[in-house]
Image 1: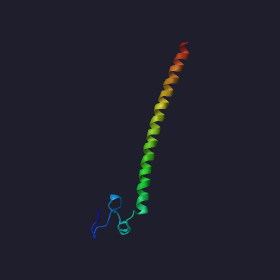
Image 2: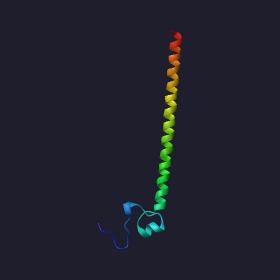
Image 3: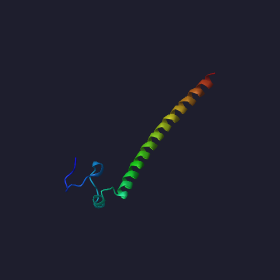
Amino acid sequence: MFLEEGKKRKKNGRVPRSRSEMKHGRMDMKSLKKDHTRDTMSDLKDMVSVISHLSKIAMGGKKIVTDILAKFMSDH
């Protein structure tokens, strides 16, 4: 279980990215923030596209319902 003296243990099994991270053995806050914001933005974009798609479907359904109602009213 113990590692040899020369080897540094990787935190969470992840290879250090930057020099400062290798020195301190922890993640750079800057790089962490950058990655996090990028992920959040892509998630938000996905959510927005899904919501717009659903709203388009809902609007289409509303239009169909109003057309049917108009036809029904004109027939009677």
